[in-house]
Image 1 (cartoon, rainbow, N blue to C red):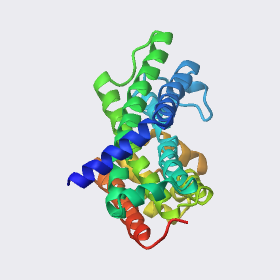
Image 2 (cartoon, rainbow, N blue to C red; image 1 turned 60 degrees about the vertical axis):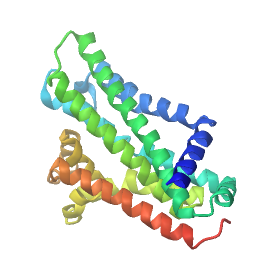
Image 3 (cartoon, rainbow, N blue to C red; image 1 turned 90 degrees about the vertical axis):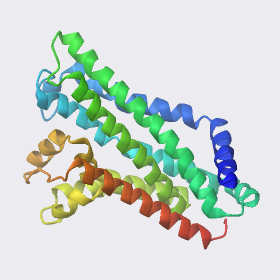
Image 4 (tube, one colour; image 1 turned 180 degrees about the vertical axis):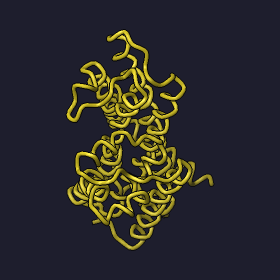
Length: 268
């Protein structure tokens, strides 16, 4: 246990001596507050396709649903952070100091999990601020109460933290930066969305990260609009608890695979 604490302390010190935490929080602010504020101030009804106004439940849910579109960002941060260590071979020094690679990976997951939680908190609260900036500018009351808005935004924040862990797992398995980035962007930005609208294949969507995220957040307004534009049935999602468990399952599976692969490879 003491060795694990030392490994975590070393990872925290290493992380805080870089600009990654600052850039991570800036990205969370941009994906949360800037994105929602931009749509809210422009007017959801002016988007393509048009969304209901912020004075309706669907309007607020639709704007919050935009947070799901940017969830690949924390996954990408986690991926780049880990693969950068392999690219610059700084991970070799860590393995020399702590020969137990499994312990090193656990320390990294805990450290980046904390960074992911910070990302999620900033994402959630800045998104709420963005929505209220829009409603204040138009002199209207939001269609959802503050408690409901905070609750939905917080669930997106929790999903963002898990996505960062997924990114860490992908990066640790792939190790090569361009390959890992390609996998992360290709899946979360393309494959996951295609599986939602592809006839016949969308039956598995509830058990993919995107479907699990929709279940966890309880926000499907944006996905339903996308499905309507594509001419397919709207997504079927599970309960929030099942969604959270599915996402955690993916994070644990990617971490376990990363640990297994790490133990069998030399640092190239």
